[in-house]
Amino acid sequence: MAPEWGVTNLFAVNPALAFTAVQKGAAVLVFTGVAAPLIGLLLRRVSGGWETMGGGPFAILREPSTKRPQGSAAKIDPAIQAAEVRQMLEAKSERRRRRGETPLDVETETERLLAAAERPRGREGIDAELRAEVRQLVLARNERRLRQGLEPLDVEEETERQLEDLIGSA
Image 1: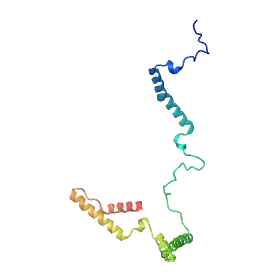
Image 2: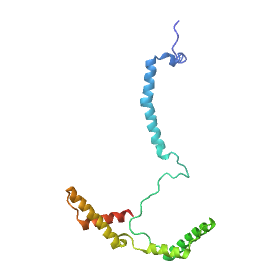
Image 3: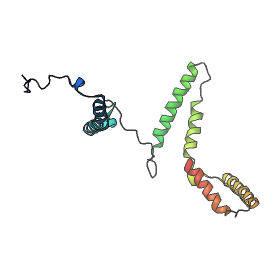
Image 4: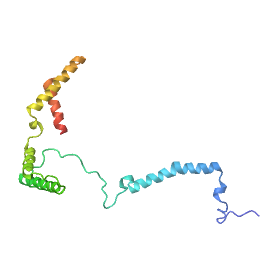
Protein backbone atom coordinates (compact mmCIF):
# COMPACT_ATOMS: atom_id res chain seq x y z
CA MET A 1 0.00 0.00 0.00
CA ALA A 2 1.37 3.46 -0.92
CA PRO A 3 2.06 5.96 1.85
CA GLU A 4 -0.54 8.59 2.23
CA TRP A 5 0.87 12.11 1.60
CA GLY A 6 -1.23 14.06 4.01
CA VAL A 7 -0.20 16.80 6.34
CA THR A 8 1.37 14.40 8.82
CA ASN A 9 3.72 12.78 6.28
CA LEU A 10 4.76 16.04 4.56
CA PHE A 11 7.91 16.39 6.63
CA ALA A 12 8.70 12.72 6.85
CA VAL A 13 11.91 13.19 4.83
CA ASN A 14 14.74 15.30 6.25
CA PRO A 15 15.14 18.34 3.87
CA ALA A 16 18.92 18.33 4.35
CA LEU A 17 19.03 14.84 2.87
CA ALA A 18 16.45 15.52 0.18
CA PHE A 19 18.41 18.28 -1.63
CA THR A 20 21.44 17.68 -3.79
CA ALA A 21 24.69 19.60 -3.25
CA VAL A 22 23.88 21.94 -6.15
CA GLN A 23 20.46 22.72 -4.73
CA LYS A 24 21.95 23.43 -1.30
CA GLY A 25 24.57 25.73 -2.87
CA ALA A 26 21.87 27.57 -4.80
CA ALA A 27 19.87 28.07 -1.61
CA VAL A 28 22.92 29.50 0.16
CA LEU A 29 23.66 31.85 -2.76
CA VAL A 30 20.07 33.06 -2.91
CA PHE A 31 20.08 33.72 0.82
CA THR A 32 23.43 35.56 0.87
CA GLY A 33 22.86 37.40 -2.39
CA VAL A 34 19.24 38.45 -1.99
CA ALA A 35 17.69 37.77 1.40
CA ALA A 36 20.55 38.94 3.66
CA PRO A 37 21.03 42.32 1.92
CA LEU A 38 17.28 42.94 1.97
CA ILE A 39 17.16 42.17 5.68
CA GLY A 40 20.14 44.50 6.25
CA LEU A 41 18.50 47.35 4.32
CA LEU A 42 15.26 46.85 6.18
CA LEU A 43 17.00 46.93 9.57
CA ARG A 44 18.98 50.01 8.58
CA ARG A 45 15.83 51.85 7.58
CA VAL A 46 14.02 50.88 10.74
CA SER A 47 16.83 51.45 13.27
CA GLY A 48 18.65 54.42 11.70
CA GLY A 49 21.81 52.52 10.81
CA TRP A 50 25.30 53.35 12.06
CA GLU A 51 24.36 56.90 12.99
CA THR A 52 22.74 55.68 16.20
CA MET A 53 25.43 53.19 17.23
CA GLY A 54 26.92 54.11 20.57
CA GLY A 55 24.09 56.50 21.21
CA GLY A 56 22.29 56.81 24.48
CA PRO A 57 21.16 59.43 26.93
CA PHE A 58 24.73 60.60 27.59
CA ALA A 59 26.18 60.21 24.09
CA ILE A 60 27.49 63.11 22.07
CA LEU A 61 26.55 62.17 18.52
CA ARG A 62 27.44 65.42 16.77
CA GLU A 63 30.81 67.13 16.61
CA PRO A 64 30.78 70.66 18.01
CA SER A 65 31.09 73.40 15.46
CA THR A 66 34.67 74.63 15.05
CA LYS A 67 33.75 77.62 12.90
CA ARG A 68 34.18 81.04 14.35
CA PRO A 69 31.12 83.25 14.28
CA GLN A 70 31.14 85.79 11.46
CA GLY A 71 31.43 89.46 12.22
CA SER A 72 33.06 91.18 15.15
CA ALA A 73 33.58 89.46 18.45
CA ALA A 74 31.36 90.37 21.37
CA LYS A 75 32.62 93.31 23.39
CA ILE A 76 34.09 92.31 26.74
CA ASP A 77 33.95 94.57 29.76
CA PRO A 78 37.58 95.60 30.46
CA ALA A 79 37.11 95.33 34.22
CA ILE A 80 35.88 91.73 33.94
CA GLN A 81 38.68 90.89 31.53
CA ALA A 82 41.29 92.36 33.87
CA ALA A 83 39.85 90.47 36.84
CA GLU A 84 39.87 87.16 34.95
CA VAL A 85 43.44 87.69 33.71
CA ARG A 86 44.60 88.56 37.22
CA GLN A 87 42.84 85.49 38.65
CA MET A 88 44.46 83.14 36.11
CA LEU A 89 47.89 84.68 36.68
CA GLU A 90 47.55 84.39 40.46
CA ALA A 91 46.69 80.70 40.08
CA LYS A 92 49.65 80.19 37.76
CA SER A 93 51.94 81.99 40.18
CA GLU A 94 50.67 79.85 43.07
CA ARG A 95 51.32 76.63 41.10
CA ARG A 96 54.85 77.82 40.35
CA ARG A 97 55.42 78.68 44.02
CA ARG A 98 54.27 75.19 45.09
CA ARG A 99 56.67 73.57 42.63
CA GLY A 100 59.52 75.55 44.15
CA GLU A 101 59.91 77.90 41.18
CA THR A 102 59.95 81.68 41.34
CA PRO A 103 56.42 83.08 41.39
CA LEU A 104 55.22 85.49 38.72
CA ASP A 105 54.93 89.22 39.23
CA VAL A 106 51.16 89.21 38.76
CA GLU A 107 50.73 92.97 38.31
CA THR A 108 53.43 93.32 35.65
CA GLU A 109 52.24 90.27 33.76
CA THR A 110 48.62 91.48 33.91
CA GLU A 111 49.57 94.84 32.46
CA ARG A 112 51.62 93.19 29.71
CA LEU A 113 48.78 90.85 28.69
CA LEU A 114 46.10 93.52 28.77
CA ALA A 115 48.28 95.87 26.72
CA ALA A 116 48.80 93.10 24.15
CA ALA A 117 45.04 92.54 23.98
CA GLU A 118 44.44 96.19 23.15
CA ARG A 119 46.95 96.32 20.29
CA PRO A 120 45.23 96.61 16.93
CA ARG A 121 44.82 93.42 14.94
CA GLY A 122 44.22 92.66 11.33
CA ARG A 123 44.94 95.33 8.75
CA GLU A 124 45.46 98.01 11.41
CA GLY A 125 48.03 95.87 13.24
CA ILE A 126 50.39 95.66 10.28
CA ASP A 127 53.27 97.96 10.92
CA ALA A 128 55.47 99.57 8.31
CA GLU A 129 58.34 97.22 9.09
CA LEU A 130 56.29 94.12 8.29
CA ARG A 131 54.91 95.70 5.14
CA ALA A 132 58.47 96.56 3.99
CA GLU A 133 59.64 93.00 4.66
CA VAL A 134 56.78 91.49 2.66
CA ARG A 135 57.48 93.97 -0.14
CA GLN A 136 61.14 92.85 -0.22
CA LEU A 137 60.01 89.24 -0.53
CA VAL A 138 57.75 90.17 -3.45
CA LEU A 139 60.63 92.01 -5.14
CA ALA A 140 62.86 88.94 -4.72
CA ARG A 141 60.12 86.75 -6.20
CA ASN A 142 59.85 89.11 -9.16
CA GLU A 143 63.59 88.86 -9.78
CA ARG A 144 63.34 85.06 -9.83
CA ARG A 145 60.39 85.23 -12.20
CA LEU A 146 62.32 87.50 -14.57
CA ARG A 147 65.29 85.07 -14.54
CA GLN A 148 62.87 82.24 -15.39
CA GLY A 149 61.43 84.23 -18.25
CA LEU A 150 58.06 84.76 -16.57
CA GLU A 151 56.12 87.98 -16.37
CA PRO A 152 56.75 89.96 -13.16
CA LEU A 153 53.95 90.50 -10.64
CA ASP A 154 52.54 93.89 -9.68
CA VAL A 155 54.55 94.59 -6.52
CA GLU A 156 51.94 96.59 -4.61
CA GLU A 157 49.09 94.25 -5.49
CA GLU A 158 51.12 91.15 -4.57
CA THR A 159 52.24 92.77 -1.31
CA GLU A 160 48.61 93.43 -0.37
CA ARG A 161 47.63 89.86 -1.31
CA GLN A 162 50.45 88.42 0.83
CA LEU A 163 49.41 90.60 3.78
CA GLU A 164 45.79 89.51 3.37
CA ASP A 165 46.92 85.87 3.44
CA LEU A 166 48.94 86.58 6.57
CA ILE A 167 46.03 88.28 8.30
CA GLY A 168 43.61 85.53 7.29
CA SER A 169 45.80 82.77 8.69
CA ALA A 170 46.16 84.44 12.10
